[in-house]
Length: 194
Image (cartoon, rainbow, N blue to C red; front, side, top):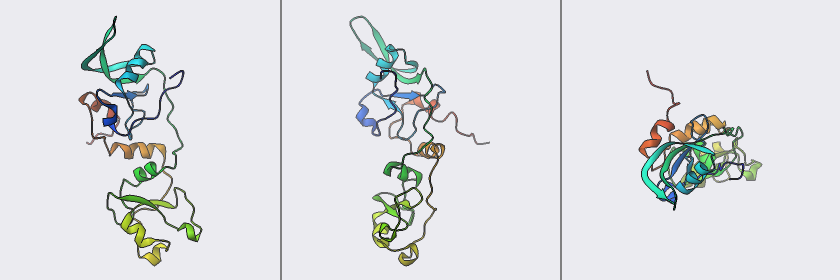
C-alpha cells in the first residue's frame, strides 16, 4: 500500500473469512458497490496503523499483539479522497451489471453469456454498443443471424454505461453478507421516497 490505495475488491465475501471491513472513500461513500469495497480485517488494521484510514465502526472482536489490543474495524474511511474512475472498463462483469444480470432477449436470469447483436461473422465489433447479455438458449437461437432473421428483439439497445450508472446498478445487487454496521453507509446517499 505504499502511497496507493487498494482499489480491487473481493467479489466473494466468504473469501474474506471473518470480520471484513467496509472501505469508504473520504466522502463516506463506498469505493465500490458491486463488488462491495471490502478489505480483510488484517488490511484494515494495517491501514489504521499506517494512519491511512479512520475507524468509523468496530466489531466486538479484538486482536492482540504483545503490546496492543484493538477492536477489529468493521467500517473504515480513507483519509485521502480517491477520485472515482470516469471510464468504465468493458468487461464481462460490467456488461452483465449494465444489463441487470438478465438476458436482453427473453429477460431470464442465470446461465448468461454474451451475444454480438450484429454478429462478428457479419462485421460486428466487440463493443458496448454491439454486445449484450444473453442466456445460452437465446444465444444459440440467434447464432450468426441478424435480429430480424432470428425473430428476437432486444429489451434495451446496448450502449456504453457511465460510471455513475453502473454504481447505481450495483446497489440493486447487494452481496450475500451485509454487516449491520455497514447499512447506514451503503444507502445514505440514495434518494428518499416522499
